[in-house]
Every structure is written in structure tokens, then in C-alpha cells.
Image 1 (cartoon, rainbow, N blue to C red):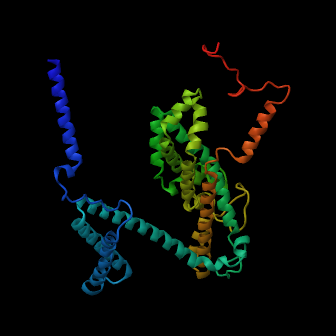
Image 2: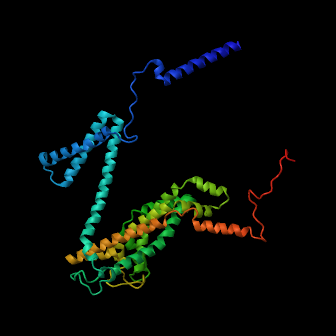
Image 3: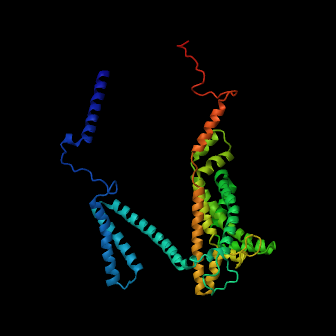
Length: 420
């Protein structure tokens, strides 16, 4: 009976192997004329036919956009032409892709076109803004006095070879520096509390931080004006403006840092705690260094929010036409406030000077962003001077009079049972 059962099992296994073999090898069934599977487009280098199918709808859409905007409908102007071209290109790409490959690739192609068009739109808007500001404000930048002088005794109708924005640059740097000194430890500390500590109170703090991200800047200025100037009786100064800017920057940095710290893998925390490190040492030596590039991005977002504020500075600091270095020495100007006051004057020369200050503000923001990125770069694991110091320490450890540290080559070996 056992022999019969074994024979049946062997026969069924043979039949299964034969079925698998006939399934994987169609040549054994005589299916030599079966067409090969078509490779999906987009995997690997595109063929000339695939490139033609990708770009020909957009060339056809160019002609269709010209026909619609210039002949059929009264939609003159470059914006209408670009919109019609984009819509026609997406529709023709969807039709051609659906006819050649299938519905799935058609959806992918439409999504790719929409996302690419949105990215190009954002890039064009940013580039056009920067180019417009630079083209309108390059003339004041050709004068050296624009960077080394202030506006003391200079009127809005004076020529560009007189006066400058030194007082506004110094004021922006002083106010932003004080605001960073306040918001950087508070923002990252708040994010660490919400992420690493947790609890019921952490949820309340997260709700407050998320609500403060949409706080209008004028409200922050009124808060500092009411508390610092009216209630406490302090004078308008750069310090009060720094407090208002800090109120605007704090929720941005805390919220962005909270998102960054959540992304840190939990395995790193568990490994540090398993090695005997405390929670504080784990956060300080593991979590924060791992999230340093993301924390730099959070600081950049906060700086971008605070450096362009005008209404809080106008309420708490006021505008000064002379250079003020001390944050508590009275009214202090800033670049956004300088731009606002010159554009408000209505004089063409003052407006040109305002565009020059806006160009300087763009360069200042770019410099701060690059500096934050450089400081946030991860340090190398071990540099060459570090290797030299380690080698010197090893040599000092084996000097005469000192007990050498046993290594794998100097450690005594224990004879095995066979060699005894």
C-alpha cells in the first residue's frame, strides 16, 4: 500500500513538472509563432518612434493653438497662446498615447504633462519676478555710495549718486540676527518636545503652533506694540522689531522642524537607547545630527518669512534715515521698510532706489540661504588630521612605561583541547 501511494505521488509530481515545463517553454508546445511581449514605454532609453510619439502632439498643439487664438477666437496675446498650446498638447498627447499603448500609459502621460507644466509655470513666475526687479533696480547698484552711505540729508528727488541703503542693510541684519537667536533654540526645542516627549500637552502645543503659522504679520506687530511699547513703556527700537519678527518666525521653524524630526528613522533611536544612552543623549547625538539638513531648511523657511516683513517693523521700530547700530538706540530702518517708504513717495528716482534696495534684499536672502546650507552639510566621518591624531594617540599608548592595550594580534591565545 505504501509503494502504491509513493508511485501515485511521484506520478503527480511528474505531471506538475511537465505542466510547469510546458508553461515556461512555449516552444515545446509548438507555439513558435506567438508574438513576443511588447516592452512598456519609458523603461530604458526611448526609441526614435517613442520620441516622435512624445513630441509630435506638442508640435501639432502649437499649430492648433495658433489657429484657435489667431484665427478662430479673439484671444490675442502671449498668455492666451501659451494656455491654448498647453491644453492642445495635453489633449493630443492623451489621444496619441491611448491609441498606441493603452489607457494606463495615457494617464501617466497626462499626469506627467500637468506636473511638468505646473513646475514650469512656477519657475517662470519666479524667474520673471527676479528679472523684473533686477532690470528695474540695476542702475543704483552701479554707484558705490549706494552700499556705503545712508539717507541722512537726502531727499526723494536727489540723484542716485547720493545716499545709500547701508542703514537699511545693517538694520535688517541686526533685527534678523536677534530674531534668529530667539527663535532657533525655541523653535527646535518645541519640535523636540512635540516629537520626542509627546503626551497630551504636546498635542496642545502642536495645535497652537499650527494655528500660529497662519497668523497675520500685522497681528504680531500689534501684539509687540501693545505689550512692549504701551504696557512696558519701552521706546520704539530695533529690539522691538526683532521681537515682532521672532513671533512670525517661531511657528514656521517649529512646524517645519517637527516634520523633519518625525522623518528620522525610529531604529536609530532604539539602537542608541539599546546601547545605554539616555533620552537626552539620543536626541542630542543621534536625532539632531541626522536631521541637520532638514533643520537648516526649517531655518531657511523662517528667515524667508521674517526678512520681508514690513508692517511689524513699521509699528514697532519706525523708519530712520541714518545709521543705527544698537538695537536699543531708537528707531531703526530695514530693507523692506526702506522699499515701502520710497515706493510710497511717488518720485521716479525714489522708486528706482527702492528697486535697487529690493535687489540687495534678494542678494542678502540668497547669501543667507547659501550660508545655512553650508553650515548644515554633514561632517565627514573622519578627516586626515583626525587620522593623524588617532595614530599619535595609539603610539603614545604603547610607549615604555605604559600598559599596552591588548589587540587581536597581541592578546594571549587559549590552547584548544586538541593542542593540550
